[in-house]
Length: 219
Ligand code: DX5
Ligand code: ZN
Image (cartoon, rainbow, N blue to C red; front, top):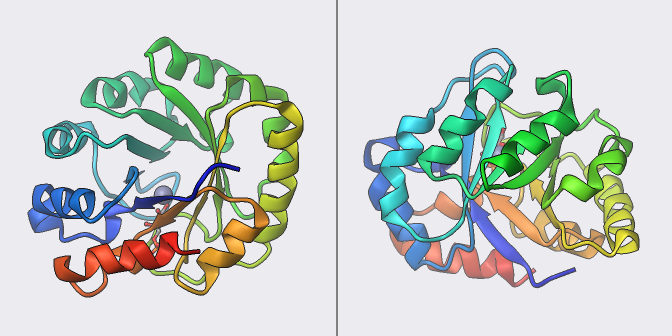
């Protein structure tokens, strides 16, 4: 388990000033920029596409952690890679061939992640561990920010921490949804090392971002 890294989800940022918001969380100490891409089909909400990722790219040198909640996902991977994603994370339900999808991400020169919905078992990642740079445990059902943390996610984080350590590989274990000052320490104790935080980062406006991020990291 590496030191705790914070990935603000720009889903909770002011969409009318996204460039400024990205610069503000970068300056406030964000480790990754978490970008939630939704298609109104795989999840019941629509957010942004590769053009917005490309527009934000010059605003921060930090890794762009792009969480694709779209299906089918394969036809769009190259576009997000070209737009400036550093890590591309997909859901196993978003295509028929997870291994092929991960190879596609690698062939674009990007790090590959798999995201597990609350009802998706951890065993899904076992056969593809060798292709993975990141595992994302959803602690809410994907689609919206500001939802309540589902505590059963902690058992999955514990199981995945064991699996990753036993493999001897360097794989980020990230948790996404309902992370705040109460749930962050629980997720870290269970074995997570990257915390996605939308609401908890962007509450209080730009002056509050450094303290918001520090408090989560303190977990
Ligand atoms: C939900 C997204 C999350 C979301 C988290 O589908 O994947 O990244 O923005 O928001 P909070 O931190 O507010 O729960
Ligand atoms: Zn996300």
